[in-house]
Length: 319
Image (cartoon, rainbow, N blue to C red):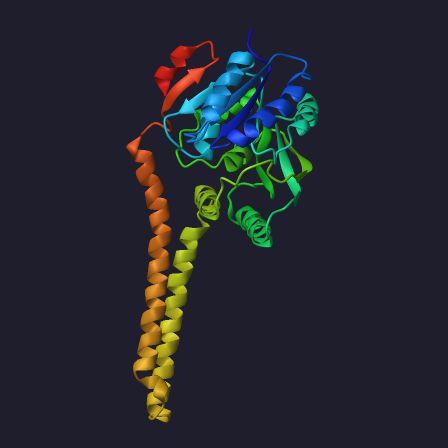
């Protein structure tokens, strides 16, 4: 009998949090009105995460897991979970307990009302630095203005997805995946549930500033062509400024022959300005070309080293 509800929890060095996550999510699973599977996706953890997950699987048949052969990243780990889970309803949440499992029951109620996607929207971030709050606030609003689709602000990967949505997401072949953007792109009936984000239960954050910045760039480049237009606008601006500088130099040469701005200074200003415009434009083009390069290689999204709890073990041959 296939499960009605599937919970996906990506894991990367979260040994300190797994047991508490399991305890809290078990309370939620016991309240569900159908069979539940809890799918842990071990994303190449180097601590005892896989061992703990395996022991939970032995004790509780509802616990299933995938183990990736190395660290492929959070978005790919979630994708692997989506490829394997079998429930009519799928919930994605993190293992650090910043996404409270207790909200799942409210999400399910909204699903029963006819919503295909229920995403959790943060209204407060507990114990996060002002810099992280500021950058996150700015990123979501910049992305919403630049993206070709409407991507909700302050909404992470914590969400509920109907089986119809999961099937569509599994058919999307792109490799540089931004789940919360794809979730908006597919459409369907969507609604938000607002919550205050809790601090991590234990351990250090796995999403460093560098990883968060890379995810932000990926989100913008994946869902907007505006950066390419910006390079065009920069080129036009450079041409206009160059013309203006030529006119100013001509004016100074004629009317202010001893002006210091007509020598090396003005030349260096022009060289640095044009060089900056060129490098920015090349960098923007490089981001898009790099994604084309990744797509044409057609490598698999991930490699599995271990699968447990799924009836169709033959699915391993596809990944």
